[in-house]
Each structure stands twice: as C-alpha cells, then as structure tokens.
Length: 325
Image (cartoon, rainbow, N blue to C red; front, side, top):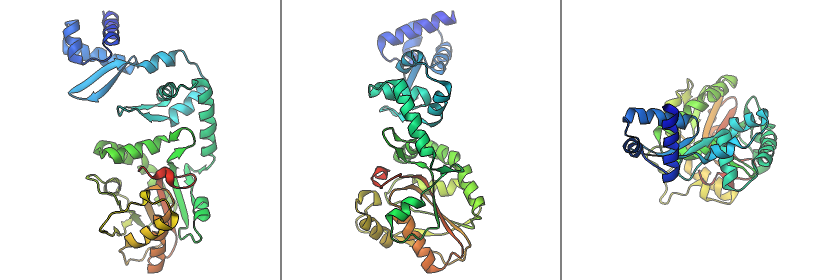
C-alpha cells in the first residue's frame, strides 16, 4: 500500500510539474497526515524536492536524483564534495554535497566525473593554505600594503575559489547577510563559534573588537555575532562615523580610496590597556579596514602585545571578489 501510494504520488507530481500537499490529499482521497508522511519519506529519499515555506509549499520531482543514480565516482572523491560543496538555487534552496554538485554541473552542462576531479584538485590547492584549520592572510597583506600594522591575519575560509565560485562558508555568509534571516544568521554563528573560541584561547586574547557595518540593515550580522557569540574577553568600542553620503568599502575599486575611507570613518573609541587584541570582521577584501584599525590601536597605545585579526572569509588575491557582501 505504501509503495503504491508513493508511486502514485511520484506519477502525479511528475505529470503536474509541482503540486501542493492539499492537491495530493484531494487526488489520493486519504488523510492529510498520511500524505505528509509519504511526502516526508519521498523528500528524505531525494525522490521529491520541495520549495517555498508554509503555508505555500510545493513539491516537485528531484531531477538531481535521476542524474545522480547514473553517476558513480570514487568514495573518497564524493566525500570531498559532500564536505565542501554548496550551491544556492535561484529559488533560494540550499543544495549541498554531491546532490548540489550534480545540480550545478547539469546547470552549466558539465561532465560530472571530469568536473569532480577538477573540483577535488582545486580544493586540495586551497587547502594547502590552511594550518590548524585556519588560513594565514599575512602574505596578501604584506604584498598589498607598504606597512602592515596587524601582527596576524587569519581567515576561517576563502570567500570564493577559482572556477567554482563561492565556498560553502562564503555562500552561507552572503545569504545570511542578504536575507537578514535571524535563523540563518544564528546557525552560521553557531557553526563558527568553536573556531573563534579556539583563536581566543590560542593567542591569549583579553580584548575583542568587532568591525562595525557600513550598509544599513534591519538585522546587522556583525551586531548579531557580537551579541550571540558571548566571548569572555572584554569588547572594545569601535565606531563607524556617519557621513552625509555612506560609501561602503566594497564600492571602492582603488586601494588608496579604501585606505582613506577606513582612516576617516573607523574610530577606536577605547582607552583601556590590553595585552592581546582580536579584531573580527565578516569578510576581508583588501584588508584596509583592519589595517587602519590596528594602526589606531597602536597609536593610542592600548595594546601591549599583539593585534590579531580574524575574517570569517577572505579573498585569495585582490579584493574585488568580496564586493557583493
């Protein structure tokens, strides 16, 4: 009976393109509870996909499944893809792992097996920059600025990688900020909190500064991060100066303009005395804001030890890649 009902649901959905649970209740003449039970099972088995949010949820055939069942790749290769790959569809649906990879390959008419090998090679290339799960960004800082005032710059991950675009963390950060969805923001903060706490402990941090946002949003990611992460060290005050016309760093293409913008609009409003300070930013392109903030800290003489900076995501080369955040 269950198999027969599942088969009828798949046939009906396949013939209609997309349907609601109510349509299936009317078609099958069974209880809503029974329909939802079948739908959950079919979605879990990746035979159906769903889009929308209650009360408007639509079910449709999972095209990815049909493609995936015909493709066999090495288990270790699939493991890499499952761990690192994520794509957000135009409908706002997050598809991760191998399912998302097949979807992405089909979208761009790419051979899945060949592209999977290329993806693994690219992931290995970027993973070589990680030590203890973190990326050292000081090389890029030294090649960008004549004088670097940070003692260390770390990324949790790159924002994007060549050919394949945004990393999983880059995707989550972008859509958490753009959607201003508190649930997505909280999920992201929960995921990165252990790494941030590890850095605080490793570098004996006794003060933390959060780089303030420029673009006005109802829900500010950096403010939510500061509020939810609840780090033990004291939070130092870093203020974004209001100007007649707001000019976000991401809109400036020249490095000198970014330096001038950071120098004039970021103020370290603190007179305490600290040993080691951690500066946290969501995404680092040029690094101008962090470098100028570190300069102010040194000029004020409020840090006796080292200034460590952490970006949730950072750029590999240049800074145009971060302009959309």
